[in-house]
Amino acid sequence: MERRLSDAVPFVRSWPAWILVGLVLVLLYLPLLPPLVQSVEGGEAGQFTLTWYSELFTTPLIAQALRTTVAIALIVGAVTPVLGLLAALSIRELGRPRLILLSMLLPLFIPGVSMGLASAFLFRILGIPPSLLTILIVQILWALPFATLIILTVMAGFDPAYLEAAYVAGAGKWQAFRDIELPLIAPGIFGATSFSLIISINETVRTSVVQGAWNTIPTYVWSTYKQVGLSPVLYALMSVVILATAVLAAAYLSLGFLKRR
Amino acid sequence: MNPRKRDWRRAGRGGLLSLPFLFVAVFLVVPLALTIVISFWERVGLKFRPALSLTAYIAIIEGARLDVLLRTFVVSVEATVLSLLISYPIAYFLARKASPSSARAVLLLFTIPFLINYIIRNVAWTGLLGRNGTINSTLIALGLRDAPIDWLLYSDFAVLVGLVSSYMPFMIFPLVLSIGAIDRQYLEASALLGASPLSTFLRITLPLSLPGIFAAIIFGFVGCFGESAVPIIMGGVGYELVGNTITSSMDVLNYPLAAALSSLVVVLMLILMIGWYLIFDMRAFLGKILEWRGA
Picture 1 (cartoon, each protein chain N blue to C red):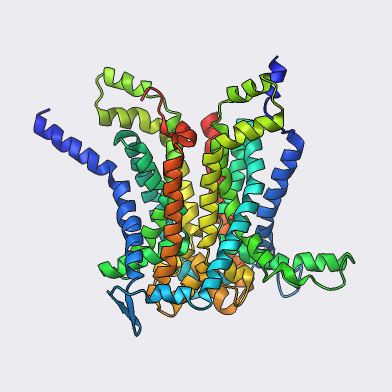
Picture 2 (picture 1 turned 180 degrees about the horizontal axis):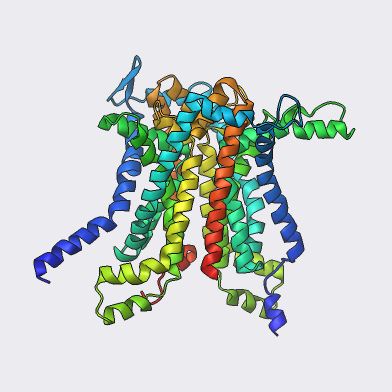
């Protein structure tokens, strides 16, 4: 009987499915290799060099973009998880959870250009010049759905009985949240932080519309690519973004493993 | 605690909790409405001023931009269907057969390339697909071809590769959520009543995963429809879709036209999203996230 019931899940044999998953993943990851290879290639193919990477720090425009990217990423990584936590709490506490969740997810469904253009209009009408502030607002908006979803998912695994117990023991709402719930959903907040950092260092289309004179690494890559095409230095910059993303994703993954232990 | 202090506290708490909602409202909903308003404004020289003019929309309907709109529609439908054909089996497998921990790991593997700057990924594809790219040089080196294949890059094919690889990875998520939310007892009942696996799939799993399918379609289709970088990188010079027509209108400071094109995309998205909200119960697939035990 037991066997028949599990057979009720139709169609799926494991190995062809794993082959499909593997194949699609290979196709998704394959394009990440050429920039990594070409960024360390010297004049002739196969020759190893780090010249292009040293140029990142000696070219003033790129060094400036690197600093801007890091500064913005740190702020986005600090602010977005807090907003995401508030959003997750507001979905639970304020009533009308569907409407609030939907509006939190809205930025996911708006194409990048439309989002950039729309906020550029708002900033122009409000008289806010293109600056770090405008970049921050656009990036936080884009990272917020991811942060909210990650925190919500972790919160869904939290048993409210703990809060009840805290209330019975005489704790106020705030104290119960701070001492009981917050430590338990901390992995979600760390997850939201790493995702916000990843999103910030990768965002291009929205940022390039509102950045004015401030280049980030991805917008520098994009505008240089459009104007003069590819170069080894550009490959080095792409590799920096890819590697930084990989490190942050690995940090997120290892947090997940720590949590389960 | 005296009542007044408690009132203040409650108001403060409500204010804090509505902060994210206000943030999205002020910096996204208002700007999108503003875009629609500006699409009716007049362009005067290099500036634009309030008016009630249809110039921008007439400029879209007349001339080559209608073709752009049509092509964008066709390409987006193709890319969305292709993405769905790839992502549904994967999502089905992850939700039904894979162990939860391996499903989580695979989902993360799909998230990372989605988050890595897709401009970088698309630019990297050009190195693989170009006339002198890796694929062509490998084919020639192996003696399988005498001359490079031309249509791999700067073609509809290349644009489809770019769009599918940019948006497909994320379409898996709503699909996994909705397939995973289907009660296994339905499947077991169907099997016990003698239905074949195929009819169980067609009559139970497929209809019940529709909220996820529809959400994936909205995400993929609207994303492709408004995509501005892929056509430039993969389509090459002169390949225009709505997205890069918006950026090129911005480059020539024709903001009402950019606003009108952008409004078309956004209104299309809103119609699909409101339809989704009205037809499907969000709890059908976000239930796990939205419900708190005992709450």
